[in-house]
Length: 177
Image 1 (cartoon, helix red, strand yellow):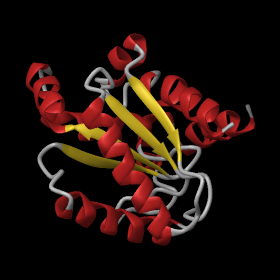
Image 2: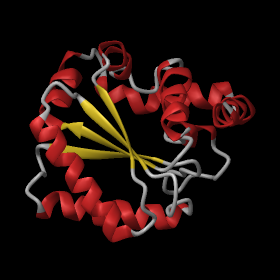
Image 3: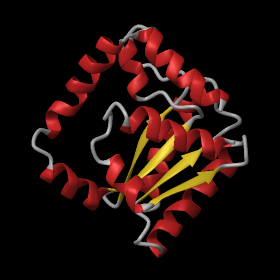
């Protein structure tokens, strides 16, 4: 269920609304790996995350991984604690500059924004998720985009134009399916 929901979210929210202009290509290429972290313990989750970095090292045909965490980090503050430690681990394991983490969560809220700001839905997902991105490939994709610096502002404006009710409804529908 978590993988199916995440795939539906990617297709029917992220790509449909063009929140990430680079996602559709990888979905079509089937180069996205979906991984479920079965543990709710931070130490086990971090070990599993390192295993995923190693998997990506060994499988260059896999563009990116969506590391789905269906249990243990449903509280957004707990998830942010995990993200902080995961980023330190990335550095400690000498993966900084090779991979980076993007974060998604059902209750994602940008710092300083209202909880009901539709812009938060650009990073809201069915489950807490770490997106492991190959940094060099991201740099190439960004370099080919006509306005990479404008992506976040475009997403905020677009999400707010769609409105909280539509975005909430779309995400709830994905969670049901």
